[in-house]
Amino acid sequence: MKKRFYFKRVLIFIIVILLGINCYILIKTGLVFLNKKPAIKKEKNKLNSLPALYTEANKIKSSNNGKAFILKGVSTQLFGYHDYDINIFWERFYLLDKLGINLIVAFINYNTPLKKIKQLDELVKKTEKYNIYLCITPTLDSRESIHHVKKFPQIQEFIAKRYQKKKHILYGVWAEPRNITPNEYLVLIKDTVNMVRRYQPSAIIVISGMSWGANFYDLDLNYLKNLKNIILNFHYYPAKNSKELSYFLKLNEDYPWERFMNKFPVLIGEFGGVWQEDFSSDENLFFIKKTVDNINQNYLNYVFYSVDLEEGLSLFEGLTNQLSKKGEILKNDLINFPPGSFTN
Image (cartoon, rainbow, N blue to C red):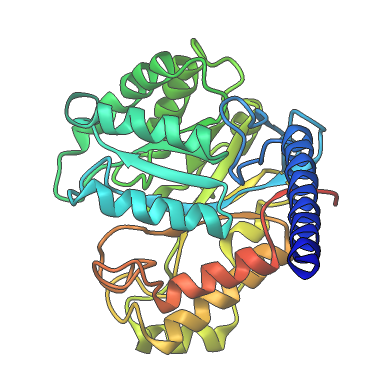
């Protein structure tokens, strides 16, 4: 009897101890839960977190702190002449956002306001949400009439009015001007600036060079300088194929923007060694790397062409989201020389 009674007392004691331990754990857990701060989601700030940009001398600057600001990004024809599953574009958009781009150039055409405006609305919303600047630039297919260019200022007026509360949008005049005189182009620039700034008084206007974006020599630079808040945009493909490019590389010529970059902010909006074939060649990839080095050394801005489904020209392989060799160059540069504010 004594042994049984002793065993019961020991058992009760053990149960009481275990209950006490459980109560202590529950109390501590409850206190931790009550004091625990809500988890912060790792995503970019929502809406209106992007500082407006302006230009001063040869720099793009942030309105938040007045520091010089570098733009690095990609371009797309999806909102202009290309048609493919928009879900492919958004998948690539999110991947590029994670890599660190802060600019997208969306080429549009004279039909975009009629046919693709809802898609463009979505792009405006998402670029703002993910802290990415958006440059909307009219373009013209090489097979279409030059007369459509006359509609560009009115199109940009429509775009500026529609998005007049958005601070993260830049406005292009014409992606690749050609087949017009310098005076005709200056009129186009003037009309675009006036129409956009009716609704966006401080908007940055991106002006491409003539001859498919390559040449500013024939334009009145004093007139451009007086426009304020403008960026000169260069498209640069010096050779037709890898054979021509090999010869060109031996010449070691200066880049065309080097004569202008001390007076104006410069964006290299498209670049590659070749414009017709051999886009994936070693020579072309070498030229792209060499050009990126020059851009970084001079604190300039760039855009890679493109995120679309274009063999050799795309930053991705086929229909996949795997980066091409060209895409890997972009990725490595964004890691080593990320865009944004800097002191120089």
